[in-house]
Amino acid sequence: MTDAKKQQGDRLSEATLIERAKQGDAQAFEALYNLHKRRVYSLCLRMTANTAAAEDLTQEAFLQLFRKIGTFRGESAFSTWLHRMAVNVVLMQLRKKGLPVVPLEDTMESEEEAPRKEPGADDPRLAGSIDRLQLQQSIAALPPGYRMIFLLHDVEGYEHNEIAEMVGCSIGNSKSQLHKARMKLRELLKTSRAEKATKP
Amino acid sequence: MTCEEFERVLPELEGGHSIEQEAHLKSCSACSDLVRDLNAISQQARHLQGSEEPSPWVWNSIEVSLRQEGLISQPQPERARTLAPLLGWKLRWMVPLAAAFLIVFGVLLHERGGVQRDLAKQTTPPAGVVTADLVTSQEDEQLLNTVAARTPSMRDAYEANLRSVNAYIRDAKQSADSNPNDEIAQQYLMNAYEQKAMVYEMALDRSLP
Image (tube, rainbow over all chains, first blue to last red; front, side, top):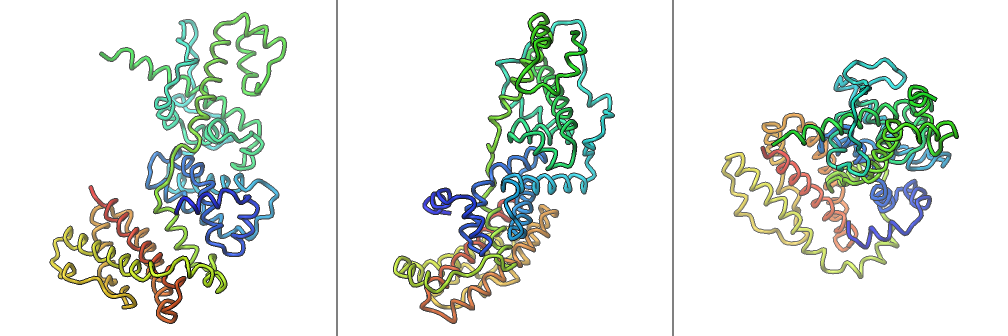
């Protein structure tokens, strides 16, 4: 798409774009896609860690959304509606592949997944020195259930009530899973840093 | 307040602590380090938002599907009259140029497959000549076989995309043939060829080991 078209799309309000898309306007569809493609794709990529799979899921999420755009009434934000589609598409894909998507209501963790409590010895602090690449790698190592909540809250900025609506869990469960995800990331980041320090 | 009690309520603490919790944080370096680390992780994570971009192939596939399903409507004749002066003569040679891209990809495909064809001897067809037939379903089969040989899991997806984009070319060609002076119809035909060229490009690029 040319730069001129992109700028034109950005200037129009999202509500106007949605109404024009309902009328079959190709430019409106494209503008809506360009407004939201990065967030949807980034979410899919971080959940699958595979660019081809993430692009296929992005395509599927937008197609499902655009097919149903005639039914959008504006009760929720368009981006929330879109992300809900993307989350559903990702979860369906993970289940289809037989990957262990941790049920969000399940509080029983395997010993391997639970963040360890380390009594006694001093823990080196992380604050102020978190490497972005290490964080990305650590996120990729999270169990899928923790990863989804963490991505939606800390990366995408959704509130717990929005996340609960999107993934079909309680607000309390969303907060609990987020906390566990952060604790697990803290552990992974410290392990990664310790391994780096011991390398020659 | 003990460390255990503090960690139990930690998931609920967003944006503020009680006086008792603040007092505990001031007196306990382990818990204050924990809170600081978790906040730092959360803050750094925000920089990851929307940091990746999908390839142009994704939108092209979406657009092809939307047109195929009739969710995108053709523009009104008034728009054609408005745009025609702007588009002018450029479209006359860009349509066969886009088709020529397809011919080039067809040549590359046959070279990679080791099949000797005389496609390279084909000249760029004059404007208005039916060009979609120059890259036939045989070339599409060749492409799909190449994809299947190297990335079997992608074959079905590319087959669906080729089916959609061929239908798009057929419809656009019909419209362009019926209205040879309609610049918008020529534009749509060019777009259709460009999309097919992009499908070929992506397939050949992705199927490389």
